[in-house]
Amino acid sequence: MSETSRERMESWLRYADDLGLSPFFRDRAIVAAVAVATIDVPSGAVISEPMPKPKQTSSSDSARGLSSASAASVAPKAIVPPAKAPFVPAGATLFPIAAAGPSLFEAAERIENDSMERIRGDIGDCTRCKLHEQRHHIVFADGDPKAELVFIGEGPGHDEDMQGVPFVGRAGKLLTQMIEAMGLKRGDVYICNVVKCRPPENRTPEKEEVATCSPFLMRQLDVVRPKVIVALGSCAAQTLLQTTQGISRFRGEWLEFRGTKLMATYHPAYLLRNPAAKSEVWKDLQKVMAVLGLPPRKSAPPA
Ligand code: SF4
Image (tube, rainbow, N blue to C red):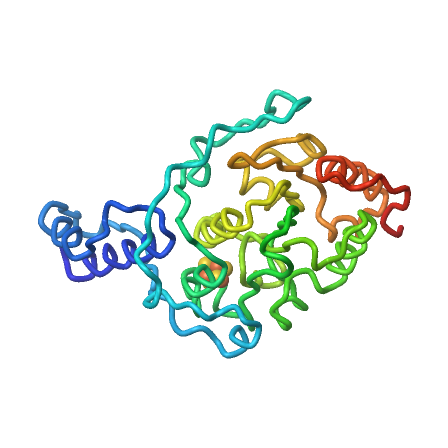
């Protein structure tokens, strides 16, 4: 194996280890040595792009209190068994979604004693995908890490990128109104995105970008352990459910992700373009309110 291939292999091992995905290569030196001794990569073959080790967290992130842990300071990760048996809510439709295959996320093991500080520290000043190139801030999350309700969007837009906080632009204001229409405050819920850096021109994140960044989202969800997840828009829903089907095929149905009830509904940005769809979203949120034990409310989000 060439020196470059060895570096790539080691970089991948570091990356996966940072995500807590594989306990079997705990001793990287041993595995790297085994890999070097046993794997013969044909000349010109591409393994993958290396995943650089996270750098220091930026000062702006520190100011938001999200950067206290670093990968180096974190205790070795103990692995606990995978999630409990899937929970199927009463009245759920027989899952209509054709999954692309066994989900990495469904199978991923939970990291014992994981925390938001640890996850943020592992992200560091991330350059793992090309979305880092034009970002101003990594947009980690907002709200209560112990919330019963989590909203997940696609990725930061311009305002979020500039402020380092998710859902603060026009779509974010509508989301806040929706939360308040449910009888909650924004600080009562946890809000995050599939990717943590703004895609240029607000384009949809590419498959590789989602695959690279979303393991951090999975760890966030494992730390919060909410009662209900609301996936806002196709990107979030398709990422969690590992499907390529359009959100309109399963919007409004109770689904499940790692033992947690999941409701997929339209993204607030879609509602800004299609206000008529707000009534559908309000119906979905009323179902969420019922599960959370929130009193019914007549007032829908503003038109
Ligand atoms: Fe890293 Fe995620 Fe940003 Fe890509 S989107 S650079 S994986 S934090």
